[in-house]
Amino acid sequence: MSDNVISYIEMCRRERTSLQQGMNFGLGGNHSVILMSVRANAPYRDRLEDSGTTLVYEGHDIPKSASSLNPKAVDQPLKYRSGRPTQNGKFHAAAQGAKIGQRLPERVRVYEKLRPGIWSYNGVFHLVDAWIERDDFRSVCKFKLIAVEGEEDFERPAHLNAERRRLIPTHVKLEVWQRDAGKCSMCGAADELHFDHILPFAKGGTSMTAVNVQLLCARHNLAKSDRIE
Image 1: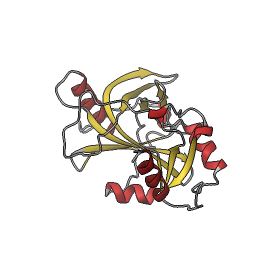
Image 2: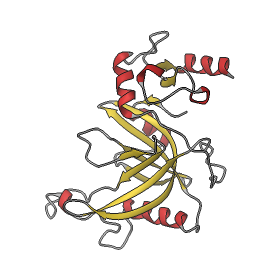
Image 3: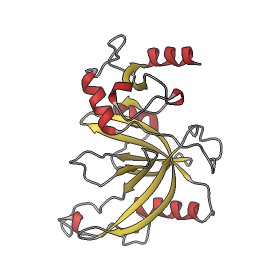
Image 4: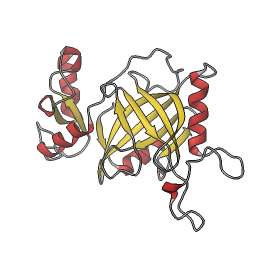
């Protein structure tokens, strides 16, 4: 389930690997993982577009080293000197393959850093495009990912025309987190939390304001879903 609060340790346990890097291609052979942030002090320029259904994700820099003291001044590479693809290169090749119909879109789980120690699972996205563009100083990689419904079963092929899904904006999540003091608004539990639409989106509710979003624990979130259905 997307839009739930998750810790870094829980993320790593779920993905069965240490997520020390923000781009992780081909985990388990059936999906990839990226870590994103749209905070003002984030190291990369990620952004959400199209009412929160599209993520434009910036590729990652070369590591800082004695020969590269300022990675922000160096073009983001698609290959290492050995010729092997970087994470940028792997995601770029998959996006280009999907764009021209040579492969199905890569399914990508996206985790968003809201603030130190607080992450949100933003659900599954399809990687559909990639390109290189210039910023003020160098060339950077950009990746276009579409938020989709019903793609958590990685044993089945990706759907080419999967229904789009809207994310709750980051500023709304942060406002709700602060208002609800990081606890379930019904019972005060502080674990297994979800950002829940008070009036469901399908019934005309909105994601664009904190007035219609609350924190619920897994138990109360499930109980509410059962009542709606």
